[in-house]
Length: 355
Image (cartoon, rainbow, N blue to C red; front, top):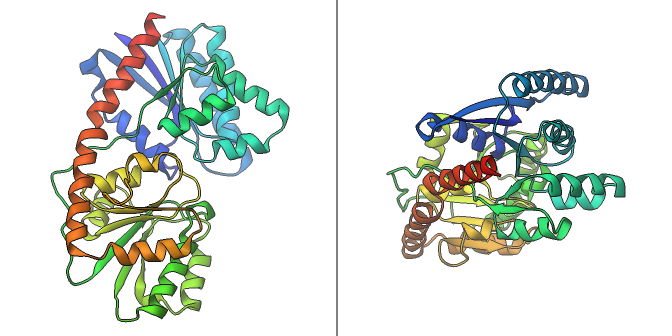
């Protein structure tokens, strides 16, 4: 039986990486003759707590590495502290000659890379060069990583979802838009508030609901802005949702909306199209692989509030909605089903253990 040690963040950490790790941990690896072990190396808290948590995780990793040497290491990585932790771990695994797969998620990785010192950039390139494979979420990210380190062995493995049987239906009474994610500046939710302000001023007869399913540092300022513009009747704040509550959010919504400034390939968009939901999103990262402009939604440039306003108004059309919904569902089934994802991961494990 092949032994795989997977390393990533604790399940309490909010975001897409946790969703992918959870999906992988729920997979029946034994059927594929794989013994999967997971050790979280990061959990939220102050700097001292995070350092102690990593030291404890590192001790566990050393023990497992020596007592039952894994055939493959699968490390989920974003940027900043996540890179530093994986850089240290990679040095250890290289001493033991264990193949390492880096699974790169960070939507702001390139921006962060450009901002750090030359010494840190050299370390980043070294890690990318030394990894036996680096998983990226799409072709655009593959190009970015190849520009940083041409000798990086990149492999595109797009995020995936389990496609439900249920499909969202057109709501003739009121269109409900859903934002789902962490409420931080780069998610662009303030731009959404500005777009809704435009609609309220120019088309007061149009009634929409915008559900904000998330939590984060920007929540208070968002609520203050909404109150300043007197838009309380347009917005509902649900908080961070998981499991059945998340499913309920999708089922009562009609359109996914994500005005982010940086992304990889968001799980929220893939989950939305799996329900047959049209999507309005910014054309960043590899979102265009899941949202095809004019086919299952609309793409616009980050910060373009006018284009976002227009997209919200355009998508509120029954014939267009039905067409977009069908395309979303088909795309989820053919391109982003979890079977394709796990086939690619298994191929990497088999390839890595043979080399």
